[in-house]
Amino acid sequence: MVKVENRLKMIDRKIDQSRIRIKDADDLKSLEGVFDTSTLKTLYFLANKGEIDALGGVISTGKEANVFHALGCGSERELAIKIYRISTSNFKAMQSYLIGDPRFKDIRHEKRSIVFAWTKKEMRNLKKAHSAGVRVPKPFDTRNNILLMEFIGEDELPAQQLRVVPLTPEEAKDAYETTIEYVRRLYQANLVHADLSEFNILMDGREVVFIDMGQSVTLDHPNAMEFLQRDVDNVARFFKKKGVKVDSDAALDMVLSG
Image (spheres, rainbow, N blue to C red):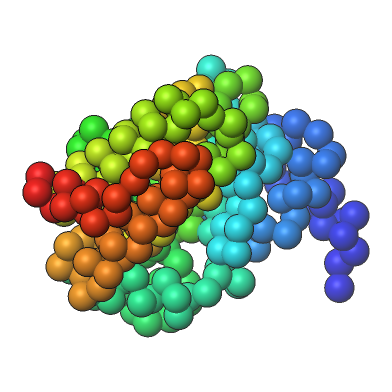
C-alpha cells in the first residue's frame, strides 16, 4: 500500500502536470480522501479545458460529497467545486430520487452510473431554478462526478447557512417570504427542492440562496407532493422558532395557487 505522504506527493505531482495549483499542504490533505483515479482524471480534464486554475480549502463536507473553493478563468473567478464520492455515496438513496424522473429513466442501476447521473441532475436542476428566478449557485460545467458552480461568498469566505445567521424579526420575515416565493417559483417551473431546510439555504448578505439540489424532482415524480409538503413544513418549523407568524397550510396553498 502506498503511504499517505507518498500518495499526497503523487497527487501534487499529477496536479502540477495538469496546471492546477493547490494553495497549501492542508488543502492537499483534505483532497486526499476524495480522489480516486477516475475523479483525478476528471479533474485534470476540467483543468485542461481551462475551467480550474487553483484548488483551495473545503467549503463543506457531506455524506455524499465535498465542496471545495477554487479559482477559475485565469484566477479571476471564485468557484465552488462539488465532488461526489463514488465509493461512499448512498446510491440506493440517490436511486429513489432518480426513479420517476423522465430525464434519467435510462440510467444503468450501478453505483458509478447513479452518481454520474446525480451530478448531471443537480446541474440541470440548478439551471432550471436559475432560469425560474430562484437564487442558486449558477452552474458552469459538469463532468462525471464533478460539478463546477458559482461560489456563494466573498474572498474565499463562504456564505453561512441560514440556521446560524442572526436575524432581526424583520429580516426573518423577509427571509421567510422569499423562501416561500422561491418554492413557488420552483413549483411553477415543474420542480420541487425535496430537501429544503435551514441547512440547505444560505444567506449571502441578506439574500436567500437555495443549495444542494441534486435530489430535486420534477412534479411527475411519484413522491413530488410529499416532498413539497415536507419542504414547506421544514421552512415553517424553522421560521416559527425565529418568531415569524407562519401558517404552513396557507404557505402551501400559496405555492400551489401560482
